[in-house]
Image 1 (cartoon, rainbow, N blue to C red):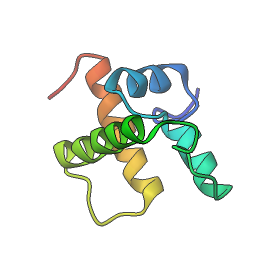
Image 2: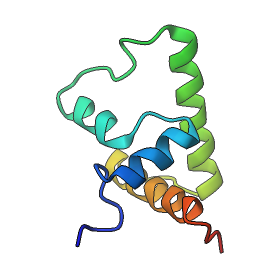
Image 3: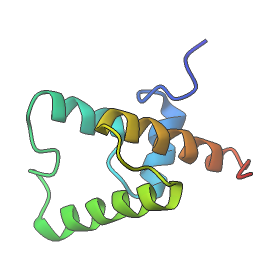
Length: 87
């Protein structure tokens, strides 16, 4: 069985797209390769996605962690919400 917060899992990617952010697997792969994940977007759309990411981090109380730890926690909460178990 795959780990619950696997970034490449279809359920995780769909939850992230529904939340309006770039799927974290794509974002982290580009970050490792030192590419800008927002390079192909216009500035307005990139700004909107970055703002949504910041809002999600604030909503879920994710701070003072590395990018991979932040994305892990956000994925966990998004998957939990998409399954309908918020509490």
